[in-house]
Length: 255
Image 1 (tube, rainbow, N blue to C red):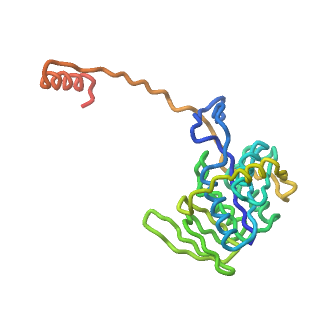
Image 2 (cartoon, helix red, strand yellow; image 1 turned 90 degrees about the vertical axis):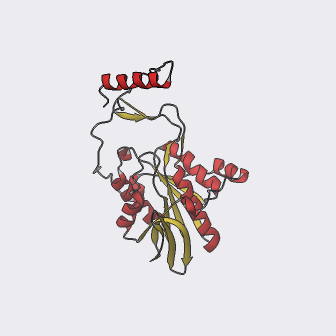
Image 3 (tube, rainbow, N blue to C red; image 1 turned 180 degrees about the horizontal axis):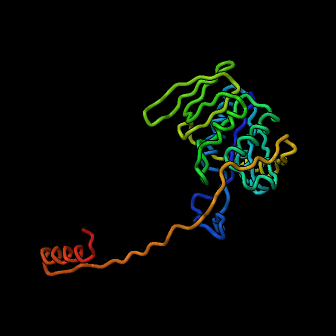
């Protein structure tokens, strides 16, 4: 079985994100594999171990995104592919789905696994949009995956409880943390990943054109700064303190 784990490179969760010149900036914070996508790689590796086959990590991004792909290789993925093109700088989720679908068709797959969302924009729309472009069934929020012949059954983790769903392969899945804690890259895996040659495909290589963004950012600004002034109210007795506090509340027109 050929499995593709779609990942993304995002700023570290400790990054202090702000607006600078109308653009998002995270300063000197490192770029890492999207934490939710580690679960996608883990889910893909579990299915490889259960049913055999290969796992390919697929990413859209700049040259630096190779580091995120190397993390997936160190976890145990068999190969990694980066789709990078200057025309993809303003990609929205619809555009990402179209490019990913083109790359998936070129690679060939029985199952495509995403994390539930990305840490940077958190839309969580790309898995379903990719499935729609491919014309494949979509099973989201999967906490367990079981392949049986030409079909896949998942247990979806919902706020209301659990839901069992089944679909024919090929299919697109998104997984949640219940899939299992992502395995830590082994020393040998890290060494292998450091030496790996990751092919870089352009839009022309996947037979796609630059999709015009449907959703664009009209304006980006930092939230207004808030200043808080603390005043300590003291008194000889609790009654005196309470009276001063009541007078202060009335004077400030809080009530």
